[in-house]
Amino acid sequence: MSAQYEITETLDCKGLCCPMPVVKTKIAIKKLKVGDILEMISTDPGSIPDMKAWAKQTGHELLVAEDLGNGEYRFLIKKTH
Image (cartoon, rainbow, N blue to C red; front, side):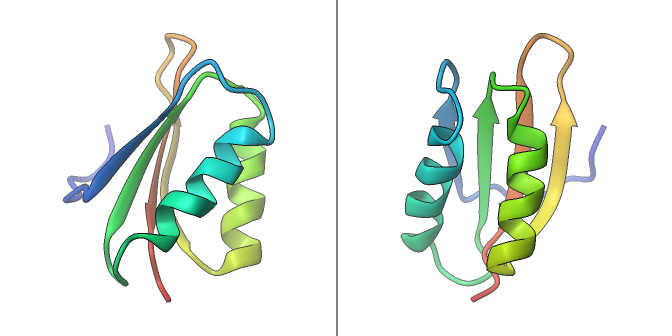
């Protein structure tokens, strides 16, 4: 299990296909303050490479990208700017 982080907001992207989890994450992260942590839950297996690429491209810190094993994927993204 991942380290404990204080989650600021949770974004439910279950049932959404690419690119919607990334699009909704982008919108949600804009509303947060620097240092806040967004938790995003997705059911799209493509979310893992998509979120890694998005974090690299945007410079936000992807703290956690995990397969929960029940068809869901969990991401913790720290807003850096």
